[in-house]
Length: 329
Image (cartoon, rainbow, N blue to C red; front, side, top):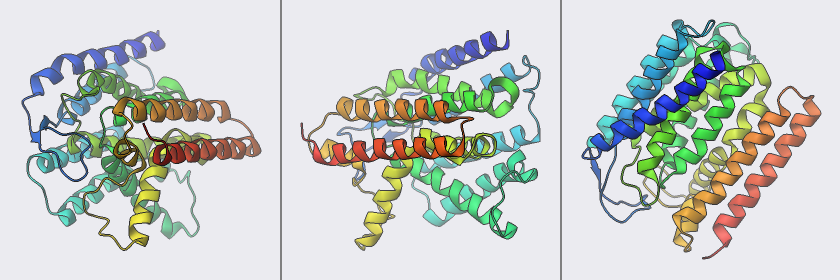
């Protein structure tokens, strides 16, 4: 019965977004800029629908499933996600001071982490203990921002987060936790959003969607790492982490102003070389689905098997990155 309810939740989230998002298409127009992969002004701010729909569906469904009722962590995470959604929506409307953005992001991430059962029960131990909070805060902040950086191509966030969050649902033992219900509802909401974001996009997610999506991804990684291991938690998101981190490192080493808008990500270089959006998305999507499959196969296996899975995942992502920067249309 619970499984049927959850599948229905996934479908309802998808349908609600598909119905509501067209009403939002006259929202904030984004003018093509340095980091843009589009050539004409297009509405953004889809996150102002995707995030509330996912949260609403998760709360309604959770009351129908024993053991998935919202707790203090659920309410704290909801407040943090909504804060990032509003911050991103504000920034979509008018650019904010980077320091102000970072402070609000840190406060929202801290609010979510403070009530996390992983932190409260000490399931993750980083010696010395005083480093636990800074490490988790910096890691989650980086994931929030790298998600924002990577959301620069039609369907990019969909092909990353829809399979990854659906995988997180299974890895978190189904309906046993509220966070797993939210992951599944968000995956469904993204499928509904995909109808308007398919190339050529008629609506973008915007910072109002990418920032809270990044926080949910970071929390999902943290929760899965505590129960299934860091390797299994990281694999579904490995492409995003690799592309964003290597791009940042390359720009820093080159002495560039890395905080400025750019088109240096691997997937962006591919479009500059002539690959179509569909060609890039097909490659990234296939890689992400394979990474999710590897994570599911490695869950619960001995450490040696998980390390082999990580090596396979790294090889897969490295092959994709090489393909993106070398192949021409």
